[in-house]
Image (tube, rainbow, N blue to C red; front, top):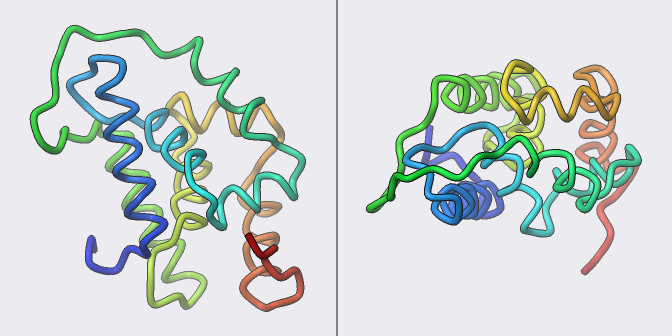
Length: 150
């Protein structure tokens, strides 16, 4: 599955590792994946913005739920079971949309679909659900709502 990630999805994964390291966590959880998505200009961020959710608002809602750990990460940190489900759901979402890649948008959908971790709960608190978010992703993929240029 890893070879099918876009460069933005790979960046999000790297940023998730960094977010976990900053807190001294010995694992990567759903909240780290969400914060990783927010650190790059990618489709997931555009979708969130178009659905009325800003980076700052998300970060401010996620960070209070994160507790510093005493672990240290050497190399790649293991995923929590919830984060593993997110990646599995991301793959499923890509297949569902007939995409031959896994992009940041699929990770976002995976976070919403998982729903039990901190990230899913925060996204749901902002009123995001699979139907609404998938529809916005599909609008972008179809060209109906093209991505802004940087």
